[in-house]
Length: 275
Image (cartoon, rainbow, N blue to C red; front, side, top):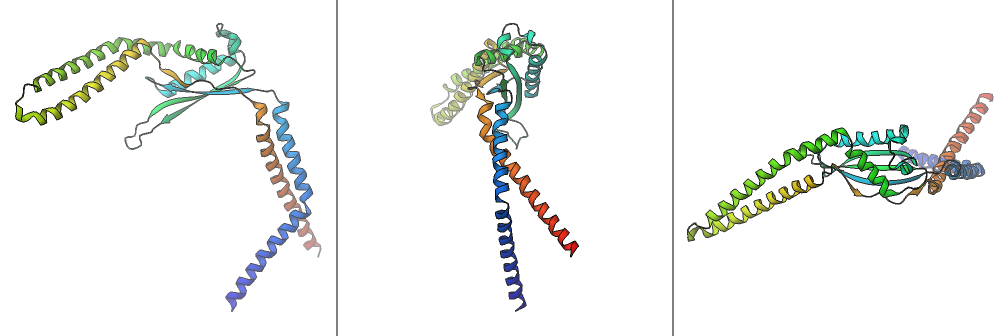
C-alpha cells in the first residue's frame, strides 16, 4: 500500500512540475520570443557589418617527405603573406588579397595493427578579401613549396639515388625472366608446377616493373606536394548569416531562460524569508 502511495505521489509531483514549468514559460513567453528575435537579428547582422571575406578549400597529397614538414612550409607561406607580401613579386596581386591561410594534416587508411600511418594529405583553407584566381593561388603555393631549401635538397638527393634503384629493379626483372626461360626446359611431368610458378613470377615482374615506372615518373616530375582537389568556388562570409542567426537566437534564449528562472527562485526565497 505504501509503495502504491509513493508511486502516486511521484506521479503527482512530476505532473505538478510539468504544469508549473508550462505555466512559468507561458508567463514569460513574450520575453523568450523577444530574446529569440533579438538574438537572431544580431547573429544575422554580424557578417553584414563586419568585413566580408571569401573562403575556398583544397586537398593536397604529400609524398616523399614528412607531412609535418609540409605543413610547416605552408605555415611559412602564410607568414610571408602576412609580413612580406613583396616577396611574391610575380603574383603580388593575388597574394595581397589573401587574408589568411591554414593547413591541417590528415591521414587516410591508418594501419592501426602495424602502427603505421596511411597516406598523408593537407587540408588547405584560404580566406581572401576578394575572390582571386584559384589557379594562380594553387601555383603560388606549389612554387613556394618547391623553392624551399629542404625540398630542393631532397629533390636532388632523390634524383641522384633513383637511377641506382631503377638499375636494381631492372636486374631483378632480368633474373626472373631468366628463371622463366629455365623453367621452360623442365620435364613434361612437372608442367603443372612450372605453370603455377610462372604465374607467380609474372606477377612479381609486373610489380617490379610498375615500381620502376613510378620512380621514373617521379624523376621526371618530382612532386612532394600534389593537389588532389583544386581550390573550389569562393564562399562569401555573408552566406553565414542564417547560421549565426540560429546560434545567437538559441544562445540568447538560453541565457534569458536561465535568468528568468534565477529571478523567480530569488523572489520565492525572499517571500519565504519575509513569512
